[in-house]
Amino acid sequence: MKKSGFIFFSLSATIFFFFSCTKIHNIEINDIGTYPPALIEPLPLKVGVYYGNDFGTFETTQKVEVAEAGFTFIHNIKMGKANVALFNYILSAVFEKVTPVQHLSDGSGHNQGIDLVIEPTVHSYTYPNPTADGVYIHIIYAINFYLPEGEQISSWRIKGSGHAPLKVEFKTETSQVVELTQIAMRDVTAKFITDFCNQADIKKLFYSQCNQ
View 1 (spheres, helix red, strand yellow):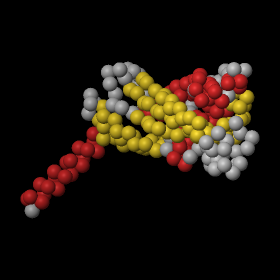
View 2: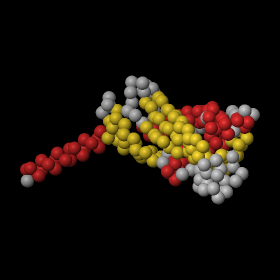
View 3: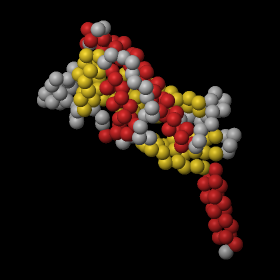
View 4: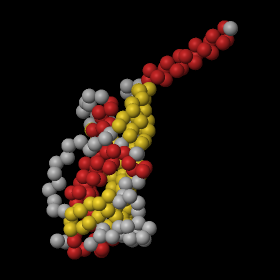
């Protein structure tokens, strides 16, 4: 009985220690925050956008250790709605007309009247441990471009980063995750708007539209 009691006590102490030092947050990001209007003229292109199920329901778990405080944060992050909101904003700002498509073309003519089909995907989402330089969140989107008939012409990876110095205080750990994710999304927005026409295959196919 003494041995059993010791094992039970040790197990209980271990569980208590784990949960006292580990904070679990379930975070859902549904929007992209407040974005100013994009001060650009839309390109005279009609694009279709395809959002795969993984993109619209994207989830990730990030383990972040804060050594100085002796805490480990487990962030269960859902951001599928924010992904869709982000690219709805970007594409409507960059292109004259944007049409949702239900599936990538199989050559059957479903995408007639469209110049280009765009499929954004999440390549990676990372929240590394804080450093002396501050707290970072990085998102990489892999954006696939297809001809209306279904042939893929290129893929473009855009990395966005959200950063805050350690001296910046957030209301909660959850608000920090949300705000830094939205900053990373703004970074992606700026890079897409600035560099879309600089992609080699895009520039070749849509030279006249990009130079109007």
